Length: 319
Image (tube, rainbow, N blue to C red; front, side, top):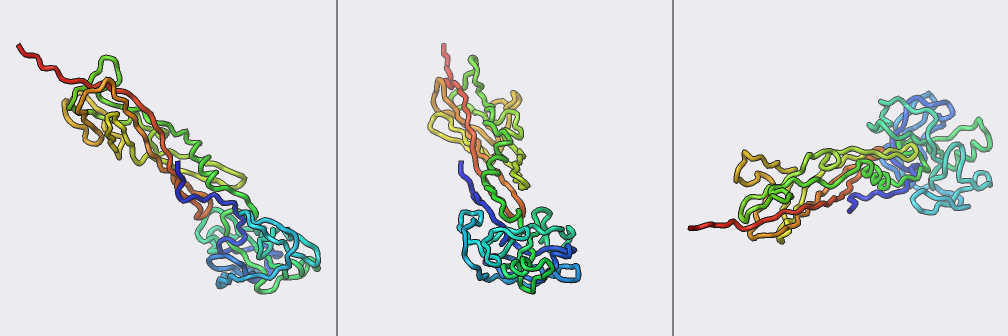
């Protein structure tokens, strides 16, 4: 099994994406954007008129005073700053991200506000700079100045440790994906014998969400949910005679009315007798998974099963 677009990340999203909110509490109206090491989109200015105005993107560095070590959530070491001489990694409902103290804003903006960037999930994160934190620590009535406070959209709250790929794997596992039941003519029964050169039909017996798809599943960790949808993209039959047949559909179940005709979409012919041939069917699945925002990927997996068929030579009787 191979994971495409692997996204096993442990995320600290204070530096995530951008726009923020509409009406927010008075304590959040402390000014404009804080420069950050990594961001995308536009920042949002928390103004003093009970509104948020979008400001131009400004992604730069922030000077800090290195102190005790924290973690960015992705395994990288972060030096926590000193606020008024005291080392701290948390302040004012925020966690130090390496650029600012980032925390979920107290009151979210209306769902239609451009701060959400069109998303209907995730959170709005408020980032306060070190200078702002020091001022607020000294005086609860103090305000942040322009450039010291910014709000951003993020898929998960800052400091959230999420292994999205592991969640995706759990979502896929919750579907209970199984091997197919092989439908085949000649059948795997004591009184059924195929003839060399005669058509062999293969198909999926009673395809469903767990054997052919589409199947849906989800997995949750804390406030984060990953959903997945999986389906079979092809079935490869190893016919036991050294040949393989790839079928891109479930196949057509054989009926007596078809007589001696070839399968329209999934068939084979044996050129010599076999007593028996072991037929192995491997179904290849693709699962598309989606986390918060634009986080997502693809997982490939497979299931295998087998059956047997007997193939003999046609006997010609002469007098």
